[in-house]
Length: 120
Length: 447
Ligand SMILES: Nc1ncnc2c1ncn2[C@@H]1O[C@H](COP(=O)(O)OP(=O)(O)OP(=O)(O)O)[C@@H](O)[C@H]1O
Ligand SMILES: [Mg+2]
Image (tube, rainbow over all chains, first blue to last red; front, side, top):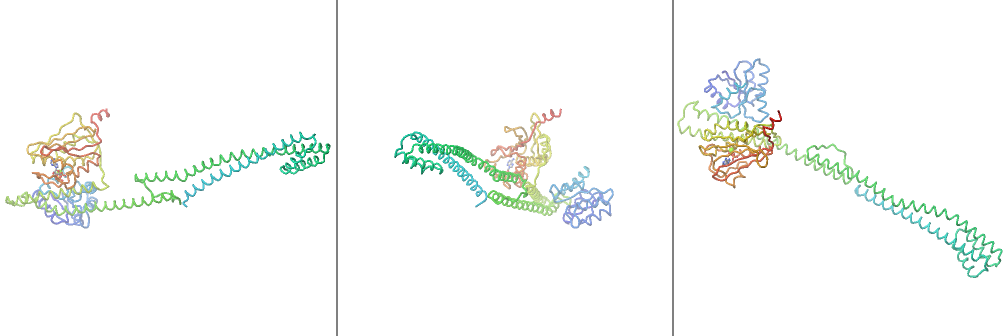
């Protein structure tokens, strides 16, 4: 799969990239803010987009909303966030196909993603 | 003087004064009546006496008597008639005497005729004033009670209604300006009290908001670095980035376990903070207990297998349903079960059962054959960060928040949570749910 990860914390994106490449054998593309995420998602095509909840420029949900408005047959979006209030989770599930809570378990991350995509 | 007490004094004064005035008038009328009657008696007596001595020779004492009487009779024509009698008696002339006596009788008759209606009038006055002196206090008291009702009882009732409203949060500041009297003072005092209470409530709400904001930001800020730590450790320990020697792997595993504990601690703290905030709401529906327990058992299968503990569910003869927030009660059972599994010896089993207890509440029991809990610790462990003074679990280190959260959740449902245990003899953690029904009866209802 070709995956876009938008994550402003460089440590987290490094780890996520490593896991997805080594364990899942995916092709991973990294961006570090909301604006870049939207531009990249619109200009290239990905099989999956993973968005952090809080990013500079544009938040994850904002990116997702704009992306879905502007792109026909948009790719599935999964949120990766440290937020966990019921309102936040409801928003993530409304906009995307799923939500992964930080901190995630690197051993099971790929599995988690597969489960979400299967259910969607 | 304040207006209500002034009005009360005035009313009492007016009632007393009117009673006094009317009764004194009645008394005066009575006296007048009495005097007229005395006059009449005297007149009748004089006429009798005059008749007796009319044709008799005049006596000195009779003359003296008439002379004396003359001064005491009114009006003037009577005293003139008596003076004439005295003259005639002095003159000793029988004709003149007869004539004067006749005139006297006529004047007395005239007097009688004039006085009788006066007595009637006085009698009427007397009756009227007696009636007034009885009626005026009655009317006064009636009017006074109307006033009391209108200006004291009704405002008090309104005020108490307002206080009730305040108690059930339906309070508004929409009411007429309080009157300038004692009740008005009471109202004003209550208004300021209410204002004060509302202010401190607002303050509390603001604090509450600030607190939950703080907790959510803090947990976000804590989770972000933990994501990197947990991720790095996970990559190292799983060998994805290359193999480590045994000792290094051991150390990494320790770091990993403690990171997991930290993550659980943050999640639990966040949960507790949520529950303690006023905005926390349950989403209750009817759920089958059997289904609930089975899904809890499923979710803990992994932990149970690692611990080599069996999970067993005892079914009651008929399934029961209860009204609860499924996620939240699942959290409670998972907490209790993971404790039970954590503290169970290898090869033992953890038993779940549910039934209607003697207080006719639905009870769920989680039974283990672990070390048990000393009597002195049984209350304590339900408090935040309190753990029993026992050797640690052989499996996972806890955060000391699981039971505190469970207690808050069960109590939010209107139930109770507790433990029956003896040191060394296993423990039974149990909680109750007040709203339940038999599944059988639901099917009957539907049929
Ligand atoms: N089934 C049990 N048998 C014996 N002791 C128990 C049992 N359940 C709880 N305890 C005692 O009560 C304490 C508090 O339990 P609690 O679930 O609140 O915290 P914890 O299990 O230590 O941490 P966590 O927050 O991870 O659940 C435990 O530390 C343990 O000492
Ligand atoms: Mg526990």
